[in-house]
Length: 137
Length: 199
Image (cartoon, rainbow over the protein chains, first blue to last red):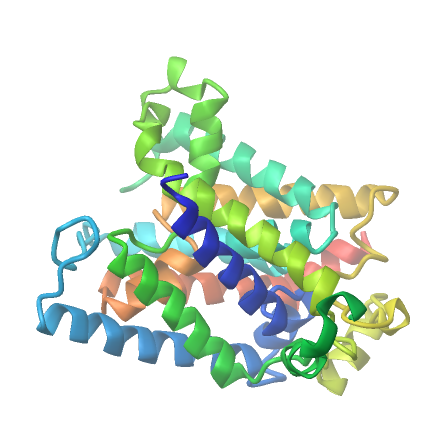
């Protein structure tokens, strides 16, 4: 019950992603073919407004509900890793037309075939955990 | 919509496809809420959670984690799933997803029909390809999912963690990762996917 607030924000996220059509495979095809501004508009607006919100939270040194200030632990910079990992992810994103958030939301929308995509993603996560020592980090 | 009673007009209003600016602002609100609640936006970690719950930590140290710290995230994605159910039950669009005509025409040339026939609120997934009786569809779903799971963990984040949260925190590693998302996405959509379909 402690996490009911996160559950509620999740419901809002699910409705937003459905109504914005960002969970549509066709919207992702369109985005990677540069044939519509829709997805760029969504991501661009979210990033700009999100950056402003984060900037304000840091500026006023707002305390989060867990009592800390807002900060972000930066990743160790490794261009090879970021590009390689991003490219692998992007290949899968373009096939299935959904990234992890939309997987849950599409299953909720009744597209049960997406459970297979999620199963694949869990397997991919597991295999990464097994072979991670052999990859550049 | 009878169930909703006299709030019909509001439900009808919300049921239309949302403008990209409204959607983007709403996603920024989700990011701000999660940040205020002391957590950082990220969905793909739930796949690692599932590996850990399934006992992958016994053999692989990477999956040894304190799941108590992850309960909020699991509550969030279950909420996302319920949000999908609410959308399909009560907020279905009066029209199919409005894809650009050039995309529809192109997809027809590679054998994917736009499912306008699915009627209201549909067009989220090309069910002619992705369905349980198509071997090709099953393999593409599993294989594509595999790449997503592998890439997200290797890159330490997916679209929510890097393209939204990381970029909003002005993180260079996130920017490079997002550039990677596009390298992979452009390569797949424009070169590999039509080839995979033709096999």
